Length: 308
Image (cartoon, rainbow, N blue to C red; front, side, top):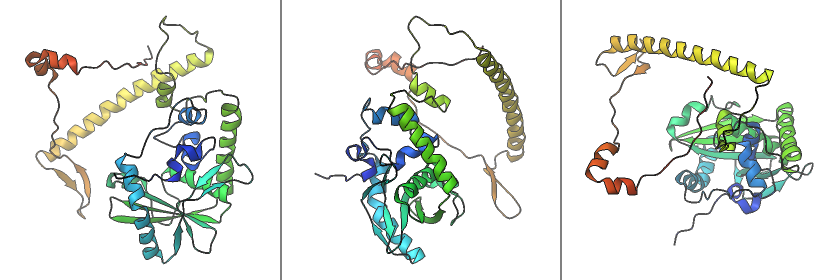
């Protein structure tokens, strides 16, 4: 039987009761896959962590980590040693780090990432700090825990392109992040007070159902201002949507049956490419096999937010 070895930072038993690098972005509002309420629930044991051992992306990251580390050494000439060490901050032991690798003989860490080709635009020019914000938070967290000089971030994009970034210490940025983490720990975890949502998506996650009795809440002056702003923004969004549609129509009329628009140097500016997708014809299924359609139907519950 094959066994997938998960990275230490993904092991819930190791990070229980600690704030690790993967939590830093969630607390700071930069992690697109995890919110502050997720960290709150996990640290207080209100929900079980997801089992990621069978996740293809996680498996690929674990499998390719050593190889990407070797590619980094080949590209830069910098010798590294892979690590699976758990480290805690001496100044604030709640902060924990599970580093991927360390430069031999130096107080310099290496973070190894793998990502799909379609995420390439999220990574800026090499040798800069221009990496996805949640990864920058992760590395700043590691810099705080270890006290090391700087960090390399190496990413393999689409299994082909290796890019290297150097993250120097930014003491102001590190302090701002750790202050948020400490505030989260002291005012939410210790006091058992859920954090306020930092986005509409997080609010939907934190408050998935309305009260059965359709409870009403009185609008404060602040809420009235927010609702008025919401109306104005929705009006502008509708106007912008119309402008975009009209602009796209003019481009399409120029392209006609062409698939690509290029400039004088041959650089792609726009594409209009054929595509297809397969979907289930639910109406036909119900007519042909009503029992089967009912057997595999499910009810999805959701809340709909509207400004009236």
